[in-house]
Amino acid sequence: MNADGEVETRCGFVALLGAPNAGKSTLMNTMVGAKVSIVTQKVQTTRTRILGVTALDRTQLVFVDTPGIFKPRRRLDRAMVAAAWSGAADADIVALLIDAGMRLEGDTQRIIDGLKQNGGRAICVLNKIDTVPRENLLKLIDDLQAEEIFTDFFMVSALKGEGVEELKAALAERLPVGPWHFPEDQLSDMNDRLFAAEITREKLFLNLHQELPYALTVETETWEPFDNGAVKVEQVIYVERASQKGIVLGKGGERIKRVRTLAQEDLQELMGRDVHLFLFVKVRKNWGDDPERYRDWGLDFST
Image (cartoon, rainbow, N blue to C red):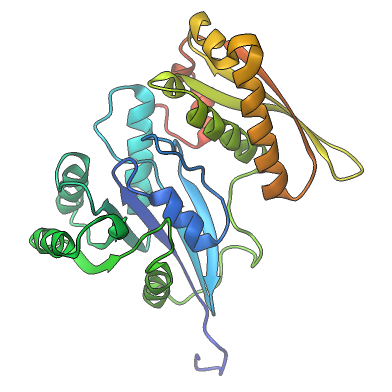
C-alpha cells in the first residue's frame, strides 16, 4: 500500500534464457496457463521473441520466451540468438533454464560465459528434475554456484507443473512496483495471423524429420472472418527446394492433409471458434535471406 492508501501493483518482464530444448516454451505455457508458444521435441523450435502474460494477485508477470542460444551458422541463427540476448538485456529478471539431465557444457556454458561478460545476474531454474537422481541435482547445483552469477536456484518440472507455482510466486515478489502493461485478459502479444502460422509450423515440425523443418517457414496470407464467428485462414508453406515440396505434401498429399487437420483442430480449440484452414506449399529459394521475413518475426536482419 502506498502513501495514498492505494494497494500497489507490480509488473515486470522475466526473460527465459536457455539452450535449445531446455524447456523455455513449456515453462512459459505452464506459467501462463495457456498455449502461447509452440513446443516440439526438436531444438530451435522458437524463432522469435514471444511474450506470455499472467498475473498473481496484484502482480502482472510478462514472460519473454526467447529463441534458444546456440552457436549460430546461418543468418537466421544469428538473428535468433541476437533476439534472445536482447530479451535478456531488456528484462527486469533473467531466468536461465537448464536441463538438469544435461552436462554443464556447450550451449549452456556459452550462455553462462555470456552473462559473466556482460556483468549479468540470473535466477537459475533447473528443469526436468523428475528425470534426474537427487544426488546428481545436488552436484549440478554445486557446480553452478561456483559460476557466481546466480542469485537463486529453483527446481521444476515444467511439463508436470512441479515447482512452477513456487517459482512464479518468487518471481512476482521480485518485480518492481508499477502499473500493469497489458489488459487483465491478454495472454500474449502475438497477433492471430502469426499465431496461426506458428501452430501450423509446430505440426510440420512434429510430422517431418531431420533437417527439413528448419528449411521451411509458414505465412498466413488470408484471414477472413465470417459473421457467424468462423474464420477462413489460408497459409503458404515455403520450402527452399522443389524436392522438399514433395516431402511436405507426402504420398498422395497424405502428410499435408494430416498437418492441416492437426493444425485446424488445435486452432479451433485455442481460439474458441470454427477455423477453415487451407494450406499451400510453394518453393522460395533463400527465403531465409529475405528481410521481410525477419520483420514479420521481429528479428534484426542485419545481424
